[in-house]
Amino acid sequence: MKQGAQSGDLLAELAPAETRPLADRMRPATLAECMGQQHIIGDEHVLTQAIANNHLHSMVFWGPPGTGKTTLARIVAQSANAEFIALSAVLSGVKDIREAIEQARMNQSAGRATILFVDEVHRFNKSQQDAFLPHIEDGTIYFIGATTENPSFELNNALLSRVKVYVLKSLDSDAIKAVLQRAIEHDVVLSQKQIVISNKALGMLTAVADGDARRALNFLEIAVDLADTGRERIEISEKIVEDVSAQSLRRFDKGGEAFYDQISAMHKSVRGSDPDAALYWFARMIDGGCDPLYIARRVVHMASEDIGNADPRGLQLALDAWESYERLGSPEGELAIAQAVAYLACTSKSNAVYKAYGEAMRDAREHGSLEVPLHIRNAPTRLMKELGYGKDYRYAHDEPDGFAAGEIYLPNELAGRQYYHPVNRGLEAKIGEKLQKLRQLNKKQSE
Image (cartoon, rainbow, N blue to C red; front, side, top):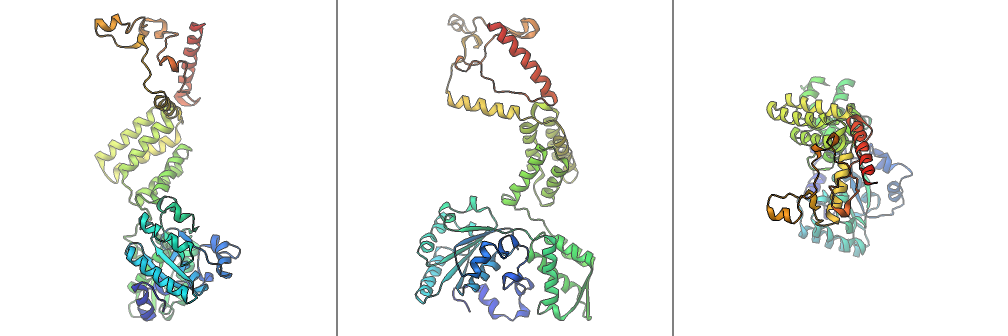
């Protein structure tokens, strides 16, 4: 029995295998039994070589739930014949860290290495994360953290600089199927039963697992229980899989990595004029439980940033979709948002206003409070008129074609600045032609 393990781990070691959950019983014990992470545990990869040659180093496993982060940490410890101390950042505090470090020092004195595994390490605050640093540096512990969040945002730079980050991926359908079939054939409990599952039911079970091996095994265990009528043959039907997964939710952690990745994917699909991809990511977010009003607001933002004056109808359609959802609610209102998403993806694109606004804002900040030219100041009083406010202002409507050629509206220090450069697409192509003519008239007037 490992010293320093969590109470849950101790109970798992003491409990008969038959009473433990299927997902725990089927936890891989070797790299060969691990599924779906060949990009880091293939024969020639760094982690595999480190394990094979007993070259321990501190690391962080970053990936979605059920991809094998805890399992890999245990395999590293077992392969290195190191003590394995597990902490959960959800349940542990500074006191638990101190106790773990004290245990590690005792192990070190006995000539044995210690792996300190911290699950959900991103939930530790800065001071708690900093507490590991001196003990990593002096070799008291080899640190292994597991996180579902992007370490770049959630872990201190000081800690990141002392570990190697390994990225774990969601298991693909083949890997999930292999996990399920291995459980049916080799689990100490399921292998004693005559379990029959059709390819379609197996495919359904794989799909609802959503790349999470633990989830897949939990669903399988429930499905077996539901299908077990006391007869020798246990048949898992499609109906049973539907019942088991009725409340299944896709992986979509609002405010987390998956959330921002999918929002980004939809935005970039609209910008890239791919309505099919844009609608897919919209559907993924809705299916995952994202607030449709959040998406509606983002669609309005897209209309301004990426469509702009190339097609001003895009902004109006986006606003109409937002209002439609507020009036209709779900699910009817989601169709209006989908309509706006598809239209924005298909129409002409321009970020000219977006860029122009950014450049104008930069000048406004860098040049401070430049004076408004006297001729375009308001002059509501006699004193202001005597001071020259509004003097020689040319009223554009009284000029030929409604344009006062040569008139300057920017501060004198910024005269001649051009921020807005319309693209040669959609309505902006015509806007660009008009501005070119007006600029030529200005140039001619100044000559």
